[in-house]
Length: 331
Image (cartoon, rainbow, N blue to C red; front, side):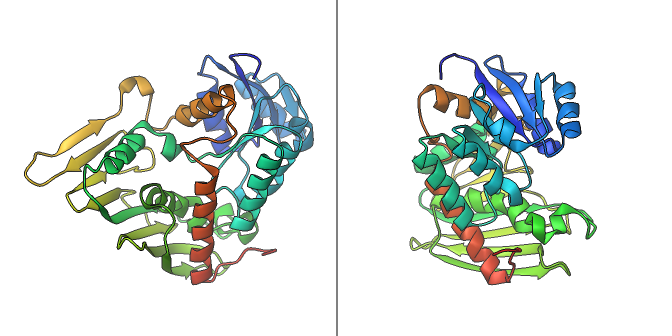
């Protein structure tokens, strides 16, 4: 980094790319300098929408743009390996959307590329950067609820999603698990690390992807996690962690919460809320700020979203898919 301003490139032009870019341009120390899509028309329309000076109709030109400090990869996860790998090989730093890749093999390859090229790489697990989730993690680590015994989390969308939708397309890594289940699994990993046991069941679509999955994770400590994701029913999208001396509940929208409630025997419930100055609960500015902090510090990964943790999550997702019998083309 040679300046205080971090120059971003945006790779892809879909809804998540637009949401992230809208948050980026509100940050005074961030500048979006280029965007790329598979077509010049899409890239140009996105550039005009957000006032971005350069629009590329291919990924390679963006990857080779030396004026870019970091690229945000926002393609469907089936293309993460190719897109992020192209950028890392060209010397760019990368923030890559979740699910990080289709499987742990691809994730391991990306992490290897980042480390071989001494480049920054981070999964865009914005949940880990959320101030309320960080407070929850600190409370648990400080022993506020004793030893963790149970984690529960769910994420379900009402749908319905037609067979033509990307969420039901095996070629695009469709299914509930990688799009939605990554959040409950990552939540459990945040609190307990990689599990030693995994069981799962699912409802599989005619196309061969999971419409609804339940997973039970276990740890040698005796802790358990009950996790659920669905494309066929809107759930509460809540999470809870129970310990030997208390419980912490996160209400609806657990992966981007604005408050949590700590329950301990003999005490009134304690509510912890987000600072209004942090912005709306849907903001992605927290993860953008963490990337920029790390780049300025010369770090090649974030302590909030460490690469070894991302690899562990991908291994768990692989195991869940093995249990429910979902495989993607080329695996």
